[in-house]
Image (cartoon, rainbow, N blue to C red; front, side, top):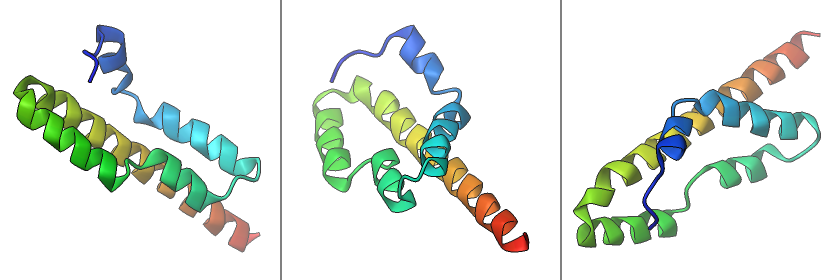
Length: 91
């Protein structure tokens, strides 16, 4: 696992930007389930990162932050999709 730069850590402060990017793809016709898979971290990757964290305990906070960030992006994306579908039903 590469050491994160200060800029890459700062990027974790704005999950709404990435969620908006994926929402834009949704609006252009991409399937929401495919986009959710792209946003989420697959279980096999999480398991690999967990093993790496056992070997490099200093990586644990970074791994935890990445996972928290991806969950936030997914939650915001789902909220945007939900809001969009409710708005469509009302029209």
